[in-house]
Image (tube, rainbow, N blue to C red; front, side, top):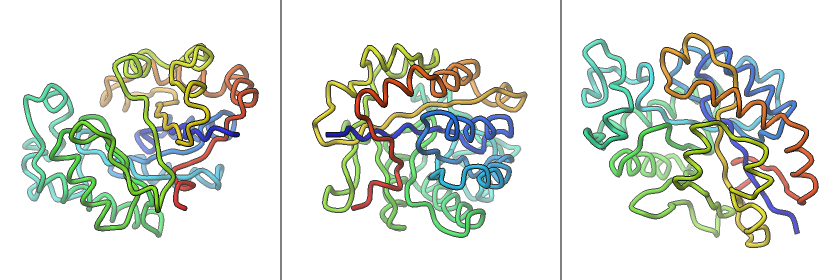
Amino acid sequence: MTKKVIINADDFGMSEAFNYDVVKAFNEGVVSSTTIMINQPAAPHAVALLKEAPHLYVGLHVNLTTGYPVSDPHSIPSLVKADGSYLGSKDFKTHKKSFSYTDALKETKAQIEKFRDLFGFYPSHIEPHSALDDNSARALLDAAKEYGLHAGIFYQDKYNQPSAKSYEQLESPINDAYMEMLDRGVRPEDFLLDKFHILKNHDNGLVTELHFHPGYVDQYILDNSTLTLPRVKDLETLCSQTLKGWIKDNNIELISFGDLKK
């Protein structure tokens, strides 16, 4: 029996340097899926690069905290500063601020439409970037329902995803240990020591969903993200022969979010 795993490269479109390495991690590594930050200046560059990876699945990484929104900033006042840029994630992560459901829904739907503008079709999967609270989670789930899209996120202390009648079911190992690995950059031994419980849960029939940020950094990322050098470690690990061998030896099938629909 094979174990299905999604290894997703988050933040596609964040910068040109990062875009090149998401494609590299797919073509030369074990990345099986990516999700794009459609509001970022380098998003069109990311789309153009797909000619080098035509089979790379791309979903939507809904971003309510980095850069500028797709919507008119005046129409989503709770999310932006006076200059029209996002407030950032810090106060949302520490719960000093809460997302407005109305504004989060409006911007989420605007990003879904922007995805269609760039790709010529709607995304089949959407997910949140960075900070999340109950209001923004509910907005994302409601937008997914309205558009008929797949979305899987933690909301109200449980992992919410579409019915097993329609989609293969996901398991996500998100906990403090997982977040610590993301913050320092993933290492081959994290897989070899089964820190993501892939081997432990090998035969449970669920698809393991993993998210990383493989790529080099440039000035845009240095200016706009607190996650910098760990991205380089993610790229090194996800392209390593050690990890490729471990995946092969343990009968693991790499799939994308686009493969979940029954």
